[in-house]
Image (cartoon, rainbow, N blue to C red; front, side, top):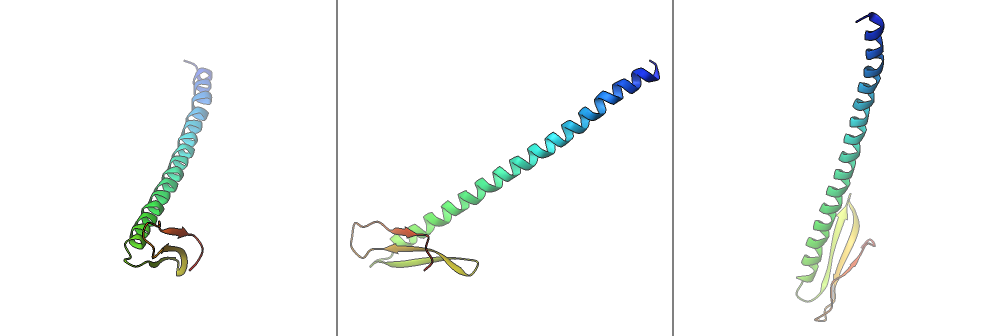
Length: 93
């Protein structure tokens, strides 16, 4: 092969290798972002379910608060009447 043929092969394959490398990096970061968001939402649902169960277990009604970064973020309230579901509010306590 002549140097022109080698140059042509390298001139095509090298940019394709860089393109594949950067495409894989972008795909990896997008997958990591989606996974992080999914895990955060799942943890939030589990925490909320735990707080609902705790508020529902209060014998004579009452409230339970959840704090985020030192500030009240959720207030879970249970009616003292039987048969009423626990009310969940995002408003600060």
